[in-house]
Image (cartoon, rainbow, N blue to C red; front, side, top):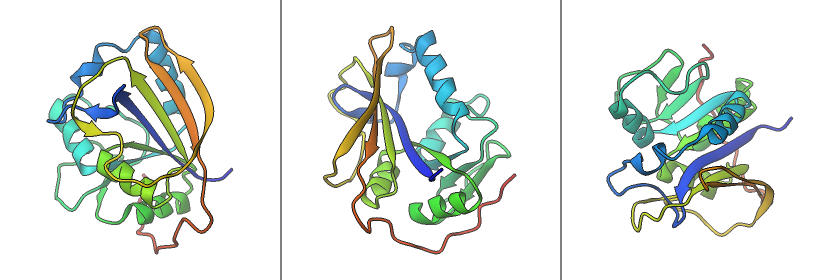
Amino acid sequence: MNPSLIYHVTSSLDGYIARPDGRIDWFDSLRQADEEYAFQYFYSGINALLMGRGTYEALLKRGGPWPYPGKPCVVLTRLALPCAADEIQLIHCTPAQAVAALNEAGFQRIWLVGGSLLAGNCYTAGLIDEVVINLVPHLLGAGIPLLATGMERSLTLSDQRRFNSGTLQVHYRVQKQANMRTQIPAPRINVA
């Protein structure tokens, strides 16, 4: 099986993943049992998580237990932040280095948890293999976009489903362009 980086994210219908201040309260209350089941099925099929600093800090602000237990999580940051769980590794490297290190450590399905900037950088670098978007029937009007940066690229629809809340999930495979990925020496990822 080829390693995959999967950008699985919830978005408003107008393409925002959070309010301008980073809050995601607009979709938390809408999730129903069928969506939770689909998410748990997805979560059981991934090996590791890749996350940006902004998403990690937003999760810390929400409080409570670490929401993604049992999976190694690499958080890309330059800051010294508190570690919310044993499976979290805070490192400073490029997204390509982090993905390469996770692949080298044997992780085949990596969830790019979030962060518009990180997702945009991964997409531009040709690192994202799959995009799964839960389109919530809500218009924010402004906020943090699905991808902060990017470039034109074609996608192939792999699957789609409608949830009871009216949320529509679309699953795409990213069409790779020749010689897109660059080989960059990878930092060591601890496997706990």
